Length: 194
Image 1 (cartoon, rainbow, N blue to C red):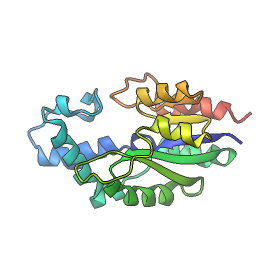
Image 2: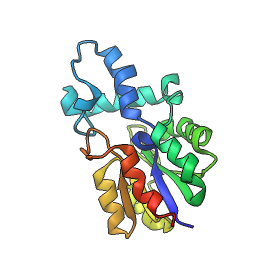
Image 3: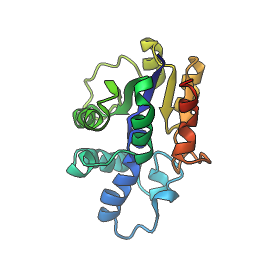
C-alpha cells in the first residue's frame, strides 16, 4: 500500500485564503487586493509589509477560533472519502510549534479516518530553544523513508521530494500558478490505485 504525505496548510485547508479574508483584510480595511493577487508565498512584499509583520499576523490568526474552525478543502475531502482507504496517509506541515497542537487536532477532526500520523518541521520563531532534527520537509521525508508521494502547494517542496525519489502532486494556489484545479491535480493519485 502506497504512503501519501499531505501538507496541511493550503492543501488540506485554505489557510492563506482564510487568514487573508478573515484576519488581514479586517485589520487592513484599505487593502485593495484579492486572494488571487497573492502570487508569492510568503506574500509580504505584495502586501507591502515586512516579513516579520506578515509572520506575526499569520501566527496570530493560527491561534484564533477562526483558524480552528476552518473547513477542509472540499475537493480534497471528497477525494479522501472516495479513495482514502486505498493508501496510507501522513500529515506533514512546517509551522511554529505554538500553533501545532491546534492544527494536529484539526487534522484528526477532519481527516482522522485516513491520516493516522501527524508530523511537523518547526518553523523557527523568536522563542527559540527548539531542537532542530530536520530543517525542511525534505530532510524529514529523507529520514522517514516511507513516503511515496508528497502533496504540497509549494513547488520547491515538490522538487525537493523528487530529489529523494518521491513523486509530487502540486495543489493549485495563486502563488504556484498551477494551471489545473484541485480535482485535476489529484488525478495522478487516483490513477495509482490500479
